[in-house]
Amino acid sequence: MYKYSARVARHLLSGDPISGLVYPSVAAQNGSHNLALKTGFVDHGMRFVNAALYIVKNITTPHKYETAEIDFATANPDGSLDWKGRIRRWVLRNQGDQLTMVSTGWSWDAYNVAGVLVDPE
Image (cartoon, rainbow, N blue to C red; front, side, top):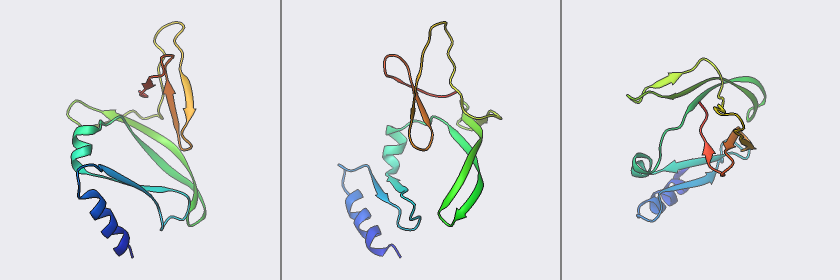
């Protein structure tokens, strides 16, 4: 089913200048995208931030659904997941601290007053 797109992806990822590809999902037909990253890029160029567990609340058509986040995890020092038993949250530790929340279309990102992305806890 993906013979030609797989061939193009292998060709594009065979060189050093490209570390990954983002491309529309043909199968999902819902405006979502696929992400393919080289292992070396993930191992050396990315860091794990968090994981979230979602449930599917409702399916109206095969590719249209409603979800809800039910749990959230950060990494333990050994790399295992530390499930919190709650959804994500951001913590303001000092009087006067501020965060600006920005929707990604799927979830939320928080930025401090200097414009630096703040990870949830």
